[in-house]
Amino acid sequence: MAYRSLRPFDVEVRDGYRVSLRDVVPDDGDLIELGFDRLSKRSRFFRFMVAKKRLTGREVEQFAALNTADHTAFGALCMRASRAQAVGIARYIRTSGEHHAAEIAITVVDAFQNRGVGTLLLGVLAKVAKAHGITEFLALVAKENDAIQHLLRELGGTEETQGDPEGSISLPIYQDPQNYPDGKAGIYVRRAYALTKLTTV
Ligand SMILES: CC(C)(COP(=O)(O)OP(=O)(O)OC[C@H]1O[C@@H](n2cnc3c(N)ncnc32)[C@H](O)[C@@H]1OP(=O)(O)O)[C@@H](O)C(=O)NCCC(=O)NCCS
Image (tube, rainbow, N blue to C red; front, side):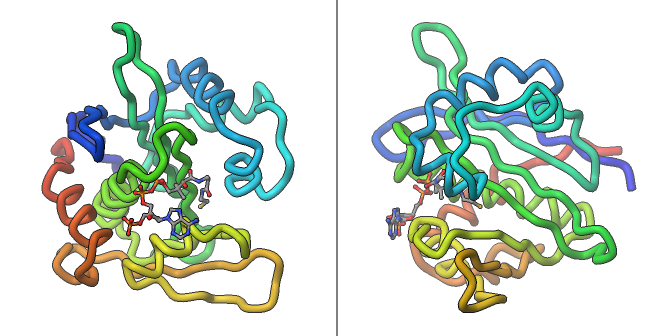
């Protein structure tokens, strides 16, 4: 299946900040490393499930790889002093053997958390994933990661495994955003769907 890229767009998030959302491209290695530097130890642990001090060159290359229908990432950027700063990144990787499912990871730098950027990125990711045949997201989450659990549950996510130090949450992905439950997260996801336009093949 050919990948249909996201038309970049700008949106205002909580507290009046404007962020730009777009596909991650191979030139984004530096932005990804700078974004990683702005993550707290706790956020790094929640994202990678290990204490992580830096990204390896190989990881940076993988995280900035050109998007395909099976592995897609979007970045949220904010202009500061006329320079683009990475404030968030979200990706899905299609699960091998289960064509309809994809594992996701979302990261927002600490200074931008709780402004709706994570929900927005998740909404964009969901609409694009659905256009590429994905109907279920799976997120590996640390038990103490209340933020992502709250967000995914509010959108209808359910826990797949119980009793492990990390659990997997499954989230159904819909074509029609009205199918996501009402509530703050649902409103943000519907807004993300409305703003997300894909290039035609
Ligand atoms: C999880 C994460 C992506 C959320 O991004 P964000 O931009 O802060 O999320 P949003 O602002 O869109 O929404 C967060 C929601 O979680 C809630 N939340 C935040 N911290 C919370 C906590 N400790 N307990 C419960 N809910 C919490 C917020 O109140 C908000 O809900 P609301 O809209 O009903 O108020 C971000 O916290 C992050 O990058 N964490 C570190 C990496 C990580 O955990 N990634 C997930 C691995 S898949």
